[in-house]
Amino acid sequence: MQSVLIAPRKYVQGRGVMNELGAYLKMLGSKPLVLWDARVRDLVGPTVRRGIEAAGLGLVEVEFQGEATREERDRVGAIARGEGADVSVGIGGGKVLDVAKAVAVDGGLKMVTCPTIASNDSPTSAATVWYDAEHNFIGFDCWPVNPDLVLVDTQVIAAAPVRAFVAGMGDALSTWVEAAAAFKSRAANIAGGRPTLAAMALAELCYNILMEHGAEAKRAVEHHAVTPAVEKVVEANVLLSGLGFESGGLATAHMIGNLLSNVPECKDLMHGEKVGFGIVTQLCLEDDLDVDDLYEIVDWEIEIGLPVTFADVGLEGIDRARLKQIGDACAGEGSLCRNHPFEVTSDAVVDAMIAADALGRERKYLGLL
Image (cartoon, rainbow, N blue to C red; front, side, top):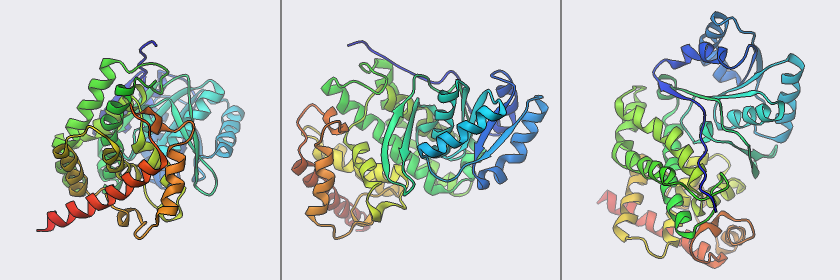
């Protein structure tokens, strides 16, 4: 099998770079379609419009309807065609960006992502995660291209809710945990080949940055401050995690996170929060993990505020029968859990989730002593 690494054409990160969006878009086309929700439009709209007007570009504004559905993809795509847009720009959270990416692929447009929260690694990826109108996860598509431009304004990120920033660290922390598992099994990555050494190095760097700077960065974002730690963690959440997961590999942490999206009690959780509990579950499933490493990761998740117990994800008191529904899906055909170098059974996943909950409760208790 060949080695494959994929990546966006250009990544721009820094304080105030949203002011430069128009100049960058001018390099790609003449009439961008901007997809955003009302809150984001009110937040950054004046800045974006000024930059696009100064660049002499046309502008098509479309308000996101709230969910990354295939119907939303078709609706926005029809507007793009009708208006003659040549660049699809998503500004906002991961779901907005995912729809904008799909619209770009469908219409043969240039693809631009501008995350306003660092809550996941969608901005750099050539993938879209799909949900139905009831917010249930239904699958994902992998596109033939990555974004032409990813523009990340760290001042905007630091002004967003700290919960989103923490969720992004949960999503990013899984990158090395899952890529290392997939590498051992020689599983193919999302890019369609073996992970390159570069992808594995980026995934490990992502992990090291989070463990060293995550708590400090969270403290700064709580005060809407942009510090070197914040810049490092934003890069880990968005760029390093994006490259690492896509060209490295996924495993149980994301499988658990995706499946929790369909559990009613977990509907209000962010993606990275669900993945945070999935990480602990995966670690409890591993057969060769050093226990000190396990404790270090769980304690870090507790410190920054990620879910590590059933109670944290709204499932306190859940019985084995309900957990078995998740276990059966994890052991089924096409599951990401097959990217481990050992067989993953339904019972093993259920036991790992129960063990994760017990471990999380114990480490929380010890932290209070």
